[in-house]
Amino acid sequence: MKSETKNKIKKSTAYKITLRGLKTSIMPLVIFLVCYIITSVIGNPIIGKTSFISDTTQILKLSFSITLMAIALSINLFSGRFDFSLGAIMLLSSIVSAKICTTLNLPFMWVLLFSVLAGALAGAISGSAYVVFKLPPLVISLIMTLVFEGLGYIISSGKIVSTTNRGYDAGGALWILAIVFIVVIAILIVIFNYTKFGYNYRSLMHGQKVSVATGVKEKSNAIMCYTISGALIGVCSFFSIMNSGGPMPTGNFQSVGSVFVCFFAVFIGAYLSKWCEQNVSYFLGGLSYAIISQFFSKSNIPKVWMPVLSSVILLVFVIYLSNEQKLTSLFLVKGGLKKLLSENKEKRRLKKLILAEEKIEAAALVNRNNIGGHNE
Image (cartoon, rainbow, N blue to C red; front, side, top):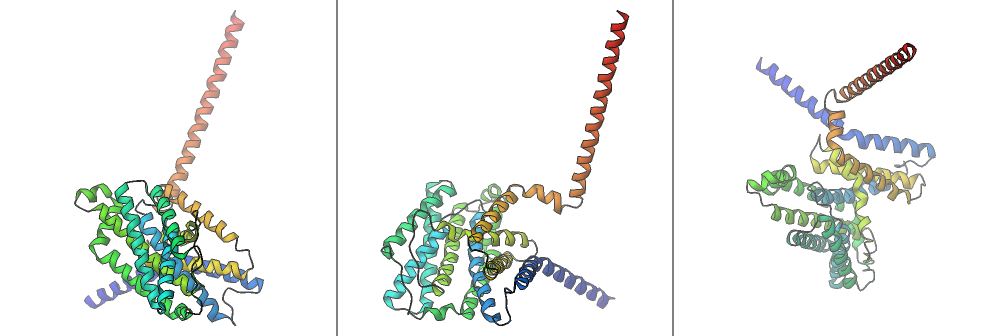
């Protein structure tokens, strides 16, 4: 009997794991199949037989960067802090690390170290400014964007920091980027799931007043969130330098859009996080975005449509956040949609009854007036 019970428990556990895995992977799988079928009909599949390795490498590289951007953005986003300065931090950390390493002729792994340190420092400064000046997150992030863009322009003297002929192309190999990515995701899983900071972060996100009342330090947690977010963007800076000729300084908020391309991954990741670990769900969101990006390049659709797609996703994301509870009760709660339809049907029925009664009363009033007129 005990062995049969254990087998049933194992089977039920395996079933739950399998079902959860299917729910988690269904969206990127559907996106891949749709994009693959369309591009195959065109005659240029997103992953071709002759270019299987190069196509797969391109998708994975982009998914790594988009995933880290999505996680960095979501850390503050779901805590009510919308950070526009992440693009400027990525630009600044790229310029700082590239400038130091090219000047001292250091190997590419030092680029990763200085990018992470510069990004973490910039994030800490941004978080400290938010805590000290107590301005709305939107305002302080725009101010810090201009500050970081200005610093990047000063450090680079307004010119591209060239990294060509430095041997940094070797650091752009898929296996190196994959190792860095896996290590970073593993660290994030530990930080947000097995540390006091992660526990406080989740408690503040779901009930700030109660958490602060119980002794959680909201200000120090916010600074840590900005710091971790900046460090992640620093890793993205490393990825960017390894696959480009070097960072180019910008100004007038031009760096803002460089990070917000990851909103698609944020939206998909937030949805899939119901069935798997959050950082893993953001990878699936980043992978979905990379597949769609590959679809655009393979189908010869102009790249100008990618920002349009990102803007549409941003709009959908904001609408979703604004109506999350309504949508949850409508589609996720058992009987929610059926209940809404029945309520609307009942309202229409009552409205018809009221109109019918009003017509009867109006007709009766007309009859009384007619009778009165005849009697006179």
